[in-house]
Length: 170
View 1 (cartoon, rainbow, N blue to C red):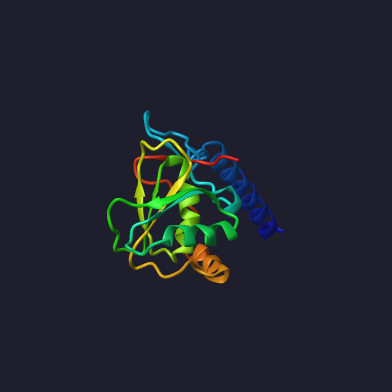
View 2 (tube, rainbow, N blue to C red):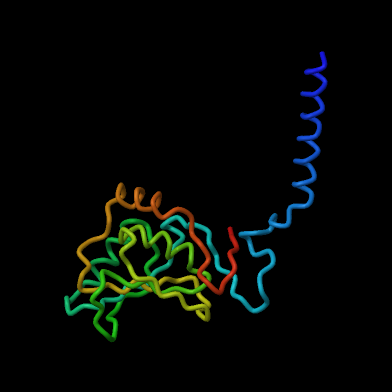
């Protein structure tokens, strides 16, 4: 009987402790822009569906027609292609992804199409939600659907770049 009273008392104390911890939780807004320093851009960390991602495909190689070919591949995968063209300077990497705060979640998805081998160039002053995909001379092909899904699992959730605060938009 005495053990039952002690167990009951411990249960009540544990419950009180949990309630107090939840009420005093100062991190309830963490991860969604709570406590963001003034002037920092709000980065949209929502992982987008391909149909909601806007991209510009640019050819950073001497291979003629590469941007149009890859743009068609992205179009077949339901991405919104805004424009295609040539990059002014040659890129040796597989690809470079250029984006601003509104394109963080979109760029995260695109990283998976390059198996996380694309260089990220975040510009906090960029105001649109379009991602520039600059193809480099090391580019061979986009990842398959299975590879993209595996890569997304490895990448985890989108994270706000340094100097920005995470927010989610619908």
